[in-house]
Image 1 (spheres, rainbow, N blue to C red):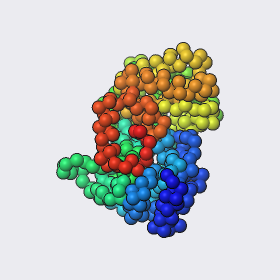
Image 2 (spheres, rainbow, N blue to C red):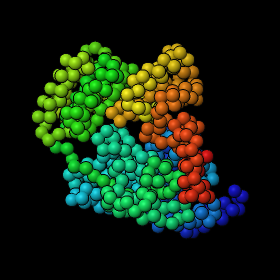
Image 3 (cartoon, rainbow, N blue to C red):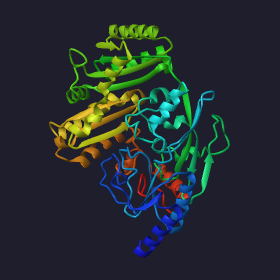
Length: 462
């Protein structure tokens, strides 16, 4: 863009929105996200306070052909919120109001910049729960959770972010507004337009408000840490749990021994059992009565032990003990400190094939990079596996590691992204999970809603 044209745009931007909202360039924190993508200084930063200001920004950018990169809490791991040198970074952090909570209908209305933790706390105050939870809850924002169709710990019980959204308010690339804040589960009036924007990573429109569906709070919860000899045994235990407790099974987090050993070492924890086991599962079960629930879980695990599916188990006797058990699963917070650099993967597979996939990855990596160090863990109850590899033990060949793992994902018929999105990092591998016809349909939708390619350009699709 010629410098004079750029200067005219910046002057009009500040005149339109004011210096409290718009500024030239951006402080360091707005130049990249948690993905580790090299930071970029954008043309300008806009910290909008209202939907009207977002609309005004997009009308101005449409007129001047200036791209816009929406930003939430900047906790994404795929580079979707990283601005370009000739773009406007649009932060939604000021739009953080929890506008209403209706305990009778279990519906909450929020602005896109509200943090996930704030939403959870507002739901809890009303005697309800919000169905999505993840480690970045204190920083990530609802708008970003919607834009990436966030998953996390509650998917087995409540589904992805998509299942929590009743309605959206969305600003389009030309500055027009889609006011889709209708709190009905049943609304078959043609295309369900809100679904286009959930998981689109800000490439089709900017989410400014959401109507969220809440759930009844469980009256009791029991947590167990269960040791199993292999993946088939883990599937058998999960099946037993779901047959006995149905949707009360709130979490089934599986950890391979490599992950457990790393977690114990990094966090200076006591080993959970006297001997090592191939797999450990953290299981949360919800019910009505704490004592009855704990007894029922104990009986089920006893049956599984007799069947050879369980080698050992511990059931938390208090909330404090449950938290200590869950601490074992919190090793991902230590990854970047202990793996240099950490090469992280977030994939999903047909559930029955996850164990074979993990074995195939380990075998392929060992053959090419002897002595490499990889960890396997995930929300296996919903088919989501995380793999983390130490970049130092593969001689820094990060791109080769990615190519090999995504080759195996394609071979197993899986998805290269279970919950982190595509952004910049996974774009070269998108064809491993999408057919040419699917990619063509995605490009057609992008062209229809953003013909000038102004919204988060270069993310997901070129």
